[in-house]
Amino acid sequence: MDVTLANFESEVLQASRDKPVLVDFWAPWCGPCRSLTPTLEKLERDYGGAFKLVKVNVDENQQLAAHFQARSIPLVVAILGGRPVDQFTGALPEGQIRAFIDRLLPLPHEQEHQQAMAAMQAGDVPTAEKHLRAALVLDAAYDPARMDYVELLLTTGRPEDAKAQFALLTPQAKADPHYANLETALNAVEQAQDSPEETELLARIQQNPGDLQARLDLANKRIARRAWAGAMDELLEIVRRDRSFQDEIGRKTMIAVFDMASAQPELVSQYRRKLSTVLF
Image (cartoon, rainbow, N blue to C red; front, side, top):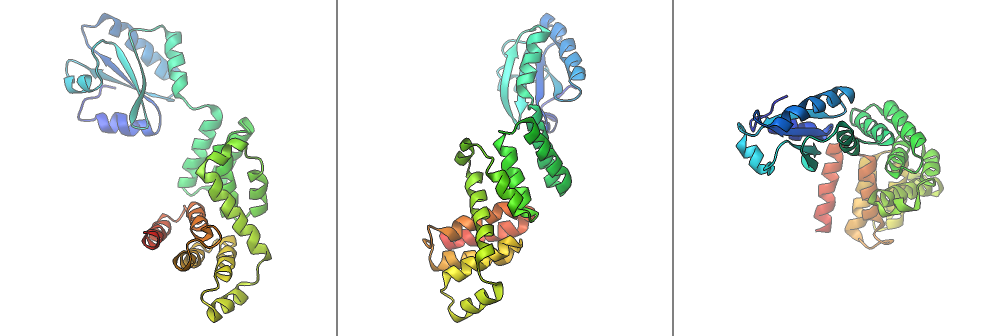
């Protein structure tokens, strides 16, 4: 399709958040352009919608041409996630263009992971789990999918399965902040199994509001049964009373809960603001 400055944001920048967009800068007087464009159109059909092809007539859209420094045409710019990520100039052979496109497309396990995340956003947990499992079958060392699978298992009340999956993460996963959050969440659920009942913990807190261990045990109990607001209330009180308690366990556990409670964005946003107020 032809795009102009008027629809470039919607047809290119926004569209590139779902799939790569190839922008073909051309002009009617350009001989190589007339050779390249049919090849690009054929490849768009061959790839079955895996990428989107748009055309920009540089004579009619000089502002876009200048922005992308289209001094020599044909110029093909790949847009992904709203920004240019690669480009080539000239009428390349089809094989080279295929290699260019393949570098932009996610691998099969990455595609499964993307589908899982889309299903999670739509609230379809069974479909998300199916795609996460598929991603890990395709690449057992793909930590991003496994960490999301651990989180899904935690938020659906399967801590033992989550712990088993967490143990399968590669050593490289430890560099990801998500790893630390999951570790904190797993520890909270595990500690909840050995702590006193909630009624006993509530009685201890009523008798001594400064009993931070009781507050932490109570928060862990609530995390285990996914009572996010109640858990965060206790964690926030720990941070208020002693931010350094057990190496900032209140703050760290609260951040882990933000991940686990991501299906309730308004609640998470509310407690993020509360935590910021206490910290700063």
